[in-house]
Length: 288
Ligand code: SAM
Image (cartoon, rainbow, N blue to C red):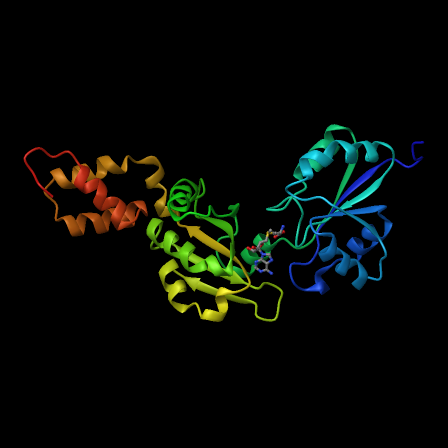
């Protein structure tokens, strides 16, 4: 028989390291829920026990979310009070949950958010880099070639000025990822924000190569947000035909090194990318 209460889906943010960041409202909502949907029932079980809550938990993760959505929406239709959490931070942001939230809205179920930690926003706020506008891209591709291709498409300035791009990086991948960022945008400011809200919280700022050179072996553990600020001056890279600029420099008889250095500043592209365009530039009768 249907419950007299209308169903409610609460999207509840949980700490990204420091339990003190769990809001009193999050505790209230978790306490009031019939069921807590979580990525890992053992992990969330520990949090609930820490709060003194004896709650029914069920798993909802990347591999079963698709199959579970219809059943969960049916329960919400019948008055279920479901709380959705992830292992850390805000569900649905580089975490599962978005399919359920979308389906709940689609079925006319009430949805509420219990706002709280989000690692990308926490990093941005404490980095000193341009915070508005910003873009959040989640995790990088696993392979370097794909990462560089993605970065070429992703790293853009904002429509009217600089823009910062936020990525999630497990500490062990930092060196490889920074090398790719250095290849694509060698002069851009980056910030590696590590272990946010935890004892070893730290911020390393500089170009990707400078930051990589300062990383200590123990900083390759744990979790990090990588922020890349793309300066407004890089905007011409989007609008201009860079190959044409390179061709003009070459046919104009400019010194290659000086011309490529100037184009690097103007477009933000790497020396290697510009050199490849120089070699490919069509200048009959001339050789690189
Ligand atoms: N949904 C979460 C949020 O709201 O930020 C993120 C979950 S995602 C699966 C985990 C990634 O978030 C980590 O690999 C790391 O890049 C980032 N992250 C989570 N906690 C962090 C912390 N305390 N410090 C730095 N980065 C963190």
